Length: 156
Image (cartoon, rainbow, N blue to C red):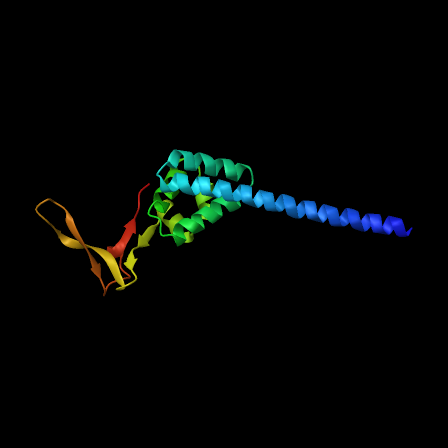
């Protein structure tokens, strides 16, 4: 009987080790997939990035997308919005809704947003008159932040 208990304990210990080992190798595999997606976005290969994202989501590997989006934002990558847009128009709206911050979802959904420069607390506003090129001057307004005059809608 003592042998059976020891044998069962060994089997449990070995299976726990295998689980840890496969989780570790899975983690390094996911890191490689994250790097591949991240690099596709940084180099502007958005078609590939969208394909990869759709594939990862279908495989239940959404954490890869989430980590890449977080890293893009932390790193201040200018390609983040373009990647978001390409996903949105490339049948990846569900990915944007699931893994991107609320502000990105608002913009992609076509909702009105206010653009405020945090350093100086200025809202982006258009001037009331047209210039000779028939365009309006855009400037920062520190007084008015709640009217419809500073509401913007991004069209996708």
